[in-house]
Length: 135
Image (cartoon, rainbow, N blue to C red):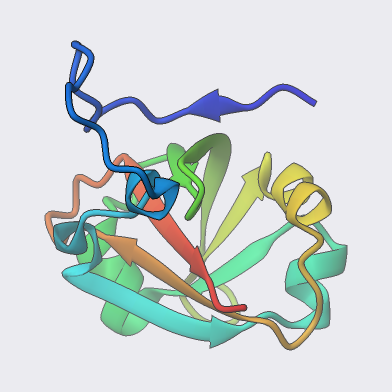
């Protein structure tokens, strides 16, 4: 399995005087990536079908343009997963995230009932989703 690291916030030069503890060096999402957030418990459908269901009302309507078809999903380890975004209007408006979502579920061993938080910028032009998995 090949992982791609989101290098957006990493400085291009080596930092001198690194701390003794490596805990401070671990990846963490920028808090501004969660101005628009949605928390959910993973369902059987989310885990087993390869589709993550996200609501339109209150989240998707502010995060995505209805014509958007692909997004980057950045997990809490900094890995980037290239996903497809499907806008569904029947029986109610919602979004389905597919593509590498199924690989993320397998790689991170996500299970039914696990709580996650998905974040995005509230610009309707979001090209990235940010994911935090609650242990």
